[in-house]
Length: 331
Image (cartoon, rainbow, N blue to C red; front, side, top):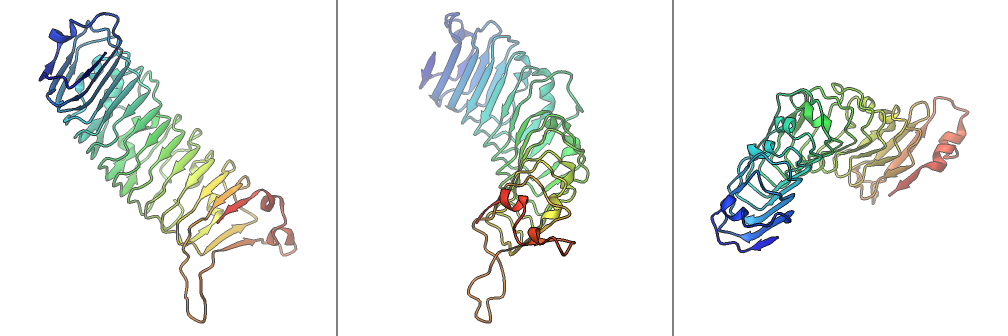
């Protein structure tokens, strides 16, 4: 059932009681008058969508039916505490509101939840007191386009229960603290303000396969990246790298794709004794190398060197090896 231009300040049981029991989806859109919403326990609604309203308060009575909650373009300033009353909810979207704070302890009551989407809010603080959850089905945490600046992951262990975490388009300057996860597969921290990343306090993560740090201010490969041995893709595009020693990726035996596009790289070095052996795609497009343009030099080249400690291994240094044949360099 869909309501458009609903002219009421409050939606509660006085309206909900008129909905037939067969109504499983309720959508309220473009209703600027709506400020308060109460979903009664007796409601059979499974999917609730509220978009483009003045909603600033919502309460969910204990309910077993609701599977999806989507609230977009509202005046909410808090994650509704009563979400904990939705025992079977799987998907929660709270976008384009004024939420400033997220306490991940809410997850302890939402044991069926797989997706928590809080894009386009004003969140500057994450908190949690729980170290783990007894039961969970968490898949996606989306916090892109918020106001996060500093994340101490040691204080936020519940983040590690998600399979996909998107922290892009924030203002993150520091990513610190011990961190471990047996679930995380994809981590996106692109379009932030990171100058340095250090994985030395991170435990080895057997599931983490893809990691993106595009559009930050990084100048060097993160320390201890070998703590993440099963990475297949790492993105460092649009940063401030000038030189890259591929030895730093040497212990990443599953790494197949590296993206260093749109940096300032003038030199990349491969060393035969330690390099990512399965690397098959190296993206270097749109690099603007910095160099001395005097003495008639008209452009700054991007050099790729292959070095060997053994002088007679000419095949490696002359681009004639199995690795050279598998590697595609995108310029």
